[in-house]
Amino acid sequence: MIVVTGATGNIGRPLTRALAEAGQQVTAVSRHAAAVPDGVRHVTADLADPAGLEPALAGAKALFLLLSGDLHAPGAGTAGLVRAAESAGVRRVVLLSTQGVSTRPSGPTRVAMRALEDVLRESGLEWAILRPGGFASNALWWAESIRERGVVAAPFGDIGVPVIDPADIAEVAAACLLDGQHTGEVYELTGPEVITPRGQTDAIAAALGSPVSFHDLTRDEAKAAMSQAMPAELAEDTLTILGAPTPAELRISPDVERVLGRAPRSFADWAARHVDAFR
Image (cartoon, rainbow, N blue to C red; front, side, top):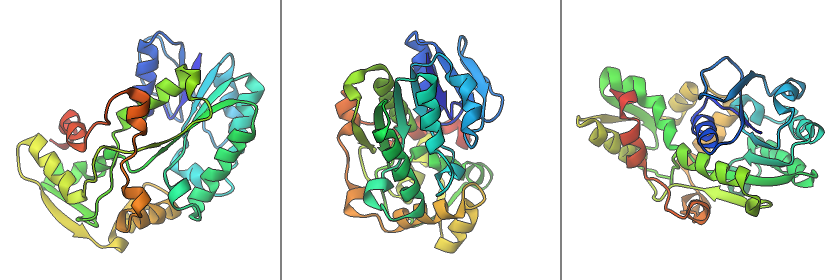
């Protein structure tokens, strides 16, 4: 049995579905009750309380560990999640980390995630670590303004990064959960091209078949909006990357293709598949 945390999100949902379709017994974990694919067990648990995960881990052989934004802060106690997996007899853990652990290791949220990576490495478990860059699905933040006003409001309109489709992260995670050849690997996951917010806006407009305008936000305006949905420290870290990406953060990683045998999906592909969210 495989346990998937964050199972109702942009990564967890397709991962849960893929594992179930592969014939695996799956337990989907989320903070709130949610619909899951037929045959999948659902358990409600808050990862802020590692003991609460124990019922989900009973009989599990593998765990996909995805932390909500509030658990990226120093002192969140996430090491207890790895210890809970060990105690339950889990053999393999795939951790969703972040590219910033290697590109900006001194950021507070990156320090906390690197500490969790180290706990996992030092455990007696088989492990793999996924370090994605920016997500294509972050464009869903714009869905309401596109639907209501036909506009995207975002900072750094002409500064791009190679955002990745969460479906690709889910496929890589499934491969790592199912195949021991990925044990001990750290995969950096990016999309196939650098794309700016203005370029993403154009791709969404093309998918819709109607114009969408772009409005540049100041950094302070963007931080105020983002802080409503994530800790202020995480918003600050994210804006620092988006506003001044390093050469390492602009690099197109080969790791999706190494694992899946195909190139990562483009943002335009993501936009076409999710166009109904913007209508």
